[in-house]
Length: 123
Image (cartoon, rainbow, N blue to C red; front, top):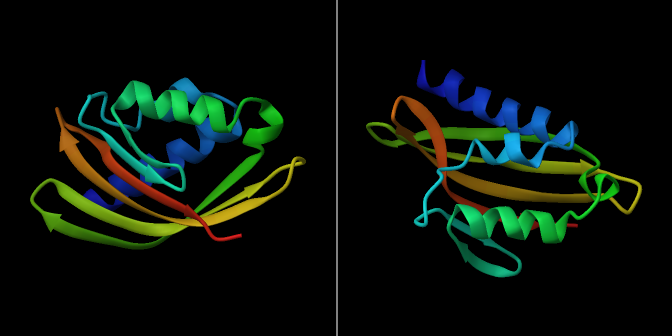
């Protein structure tokens, strides 16, 4: 089931993040210059750019904290592509951060990968 496999990607992200493992977290993203991340700092293109953005925004384990992802909707866009809308809740000693996200995932070489990520802090 595609939806279950996609939710497993989110589960892997949560587990990797909570173990302070940015490399494993980034394995859920499409390793391509065409990956797009759109957040409060604007648009970041490419896998390397997205990795660097995460490292800059979350420089220490205290900044990582504990992540909880809530999937509110998983919708098929077309064959082998889905949109996921949800919330993130980051509990940390340097101040909590909560927000919403929309991901586009595509099946690439048999694996679901995030090809676009739009995240916005709400508080």
